[in-house]
Amino acid sequence: MPVIECDVDDARERLEEAGVAVDSGNTEHERWRASREGATAVAYDDKVVVQGETPRTLESLLREGGGRAHVYFDGASRGNPGPASIGWVIVTSEGIVAEGGERIGRTTNNQAEYTALITALEAAEEYGYGEVHARGDSELIVKQVRGEYDTNNPELREQRVRALELLSSFDDWTLEYVPREVNDRADGLANEALDQG
Image (cartoon, rainbow, N blue to C red; front, top):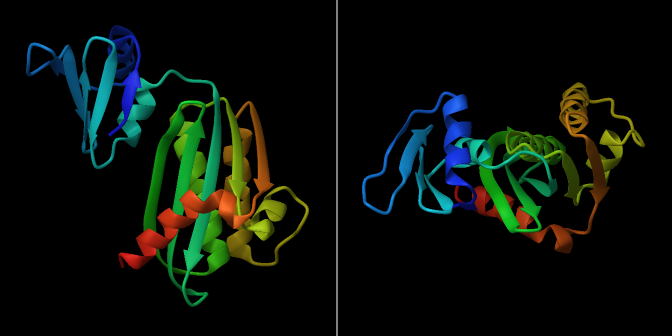
């Protein structure tokens, strides 16, 4: 349940500009509330609390754009190809801003890694970050996206193009390989999602 400390009047304006209907609060302590895509934002004096299963869209509208985010991503596949999942985390100086893990069907480990990177970058873009530093424990994916390795696989080439499109939408970006222990939260989210299937 994300808690966003902000000027709640400015946050309300951002929601209304995005076409989100904002209603009066349900209690004397609530300033206003708004809902979109399975999530509800409730404003208090100096913060907005976002509730629901899919808070990402509302939260991205409420947060002021810009700033730097560190993005961690990981994909998992059992069988290669086999049942697959992804995990991703967005971290700022405030701590973990958002994270997710989900099953993505049957695919290879490399395709899962790319899907995790793309999903994490899409989330960072939705949140409006100006600078992103992506980190993953797949040296192959990192080096392919950075242009150090090539790929003959058409699906991976297509995913690489999408990842580069997303990265270029930021004012500044880096992509680096990190050991699995540095990427443990994203790895854990991917494996939890796989285990739930």
